[in-house]
Amino acid sequence: MKLLGRKAEVSLDDRLEALAEAADLAEGRLGQEAVDHARAVVARAGVRRGLSVDHTAVALAGATGSGKSSLFNALSGTDLATVGVTRPTTAKAQAALWGAGGSGPLLDWLDVPLRHTVEGDASGLILLDLPDHDSIELSHRGEVDRLVAVVDLLIWVLDPQKYADAAVHERYLRPLARHRDVMVVVLNQVDRLPERSVKRCLDDLRGLLAADGLEGVPILAVSARTGQGVSELRELLGREVSRRRAWSSRLAADVASAAARLSADPRPPVTGEVPQEAAVSRTLTRALAQAAGVPVVVEAVAKSHRHRSVAATGWPVTRWVRRLRPDPLRRLHLVKGARSSLPAATAVEVSAVDTALRDVGAATSAAVPEPWATAVRHAARSRSGELTDALDRTVAAATSGGVSGSPRWWRLAGTAQWLTVAVMAVGAIWLLVRFAMNYLMLPELPTPTVGRAPWPTVLLLGGALAGVLIALLCRVFAWVGGRRRARRAARILRTGIERVAGELVVTPAREELARYARFADRITRATS
Image 1 (tube, rainbow, N blue to C red):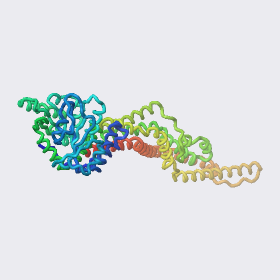
Image 2 (image 1 turned 180 degrees about the vertical axis):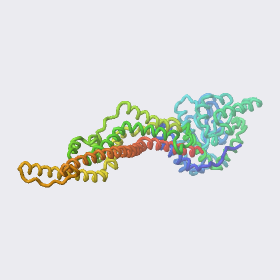
Image 3 (image 1 turned 60 degrees about the vertical axis):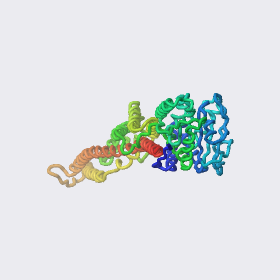
């Protein structure tokens, strides 16, 4: 009978590296106790690998009266351990050493002061006799817990009366289910059972161990008093010691156990597009656009274009009146990237943004387990306090770039308007000269006509009519141009708001999602 010894698909170094990274990724997301435990496993593995790998520390653990001290003496061929029947007699772990050279640092790390050199063939074996795990002395139980967590190989010594004791199964065996490759279970004192009862007890014990997740763990029937099964146990220990791999198998089991404790539900890494993310992102963009006053801004862009168009192309005689009115964009401080004075979002708009943020978090976190899902949802809202300023800057920048320029036709129309004024001025001066000469009874100047209308009148009235017609035509063009600029502003604003939503909401959530994906990948690697 021998321990399972399959070569791991992933090296121990890679597993330790994966566990260390998983612990770092889990910081602040998972329970601190599990994170600290994973880091402690990594640190402990680093220390153990630096100590003697030619020695295998094997611990005999059991309850009061299980006979582990007797078994310790039988395996070592000594009377080093004091044997008791009903009271705990081992207060501090002691070690029997086969080939003690180089074992000192390892025993110092294990904190085992009682050391005895034993002659024999099992060179490299360090056999530890532990206190009783059910001792009434807390210090005894603490010593057991400490060494059970660090030795290379565990031998659980059970007796026919208490092999089903819940204390050993629930406190030790079940939590060590991933350590089956570095564990042996011994049913001691079988000499006290009728021969037909031994098999029944062994079968029952196998069932209990299978329920603990320890199916396949070697089980030996032993009697330290008569020597039954002791040689088989000694041979098993000899094989494991000669392999010099129990220490690495123990560390690999520790890593797998810590990784499982770190994440009880590591779902597969999440990649690609998150389901429904595009839809909720559009909803978020619409809600942010409403809260940022985009409809007001778009309308202001159209009005501002019409306002400036009239001011630039209107009839010069009356256009000064238009200049007295404030520019709609300037009134909102939406020019040249200045901070805006848009009205604050209403309670309804704020509620819509809050709902959209929750929807983004819910959609992004749907594929991950708790508590990572909570971390993803929190990440989606982590920069929500920056939204107002970012949206304000986006709106101001959008309205100052590409939607507030002056088209070339304004200059042409303005020039035409001044030409009509010049024509009117010529006609008016001409008429004034005629009026003055008539008033002074001077000879009347010849006046050409257009049909029956004198040219001065034609120039005055025609210039005025042409100016009005040009102004009306320019208003039509201004209205069309305003709508076009409003649509362009809406596109620019939508793109800018989508960028803000992506930067401040979607990206943090995706980064947290990527963090979980990396964590799940590291956990998978650590448990491979």
